Length: 116
Image 1 (cartoon, rainbow, N blue to C red):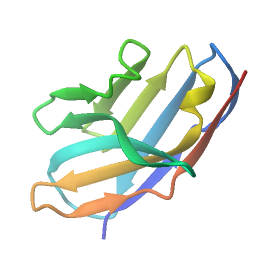
Image 2: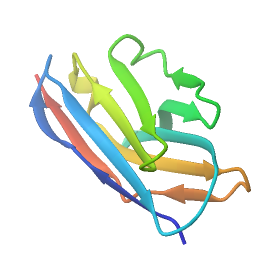
Image 3: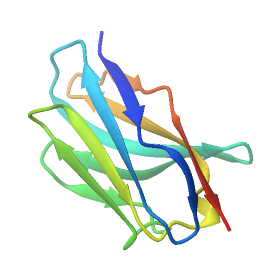
C-alpha cells in the first residue's frame, strides 16, 4: 500500500515563499500523474500543479509564474516551490499520486496560511 507524506506547510507573510514536499513509500509503482491539490472550506478541491510520468507539467492559471513543481523519481518525492504567496493561496494542500494502474493515493494534507 503506497503512503504519501507531505511536509513543508506553515504560516508565511504575503510575498513570502514555502516549499512543500511529498514522499511516496510502501510500494512499487509507475507514475502516471503526481500532483498537488488544494482545498478551502469554501471551495472544492482544485488541482494546483502536476507532473506526468513523462515529465509534462501543468499549472493552474492562478499559480503560473509563482509556483514550480518538480519530482525526484529516484526518491519518489514531489516538490512544490511556492513563491510570491498571496492570501488567496491559503488552503490545505494535498499530494496526489495516480499510478499507471490508475491506483489513486492521497496524502493527509498540509496547511498553508498566507497572512496579509
